[in-house]
Length: 158
Image 1 (cartoon, rainbow, N blue to C red):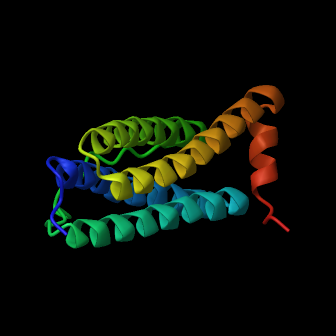
Image 2: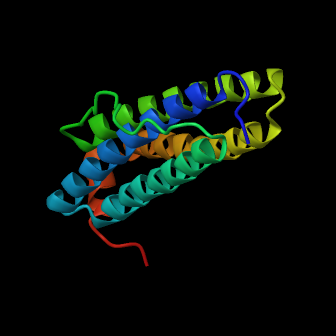
């Protein structure tokens, strides 16, 4: 099926953001593991894997639309040197992704590509849940203090 005007370009922008996020979250997860924050390690690693699945879906959809997925491009990967810095950088990445997906939904509606629009809407729901989780972590740090928060991250979730 041939893509509607501009759709492959937007899909490739989302793919670029996903490929960047995969790397950022993966490094953050490994850093948390190295610091002994097992709960945080598993949660952030899970988000990296979610981004991989999204990238896989996007690549498949671009090919379905007879386009070429651009996997050579990546944005700057921002690595936080502390857990609060990591959360702040990950929140920024998720907010930028939500903006990109919202723009994609608007464009796809305009060119009447409802399949891609639906894909973007589903991805936006996942991004919303990631944003919510990060915001809860940041608020928890504010309320209980960084040391208490980090002490809870040492244990594996049961």
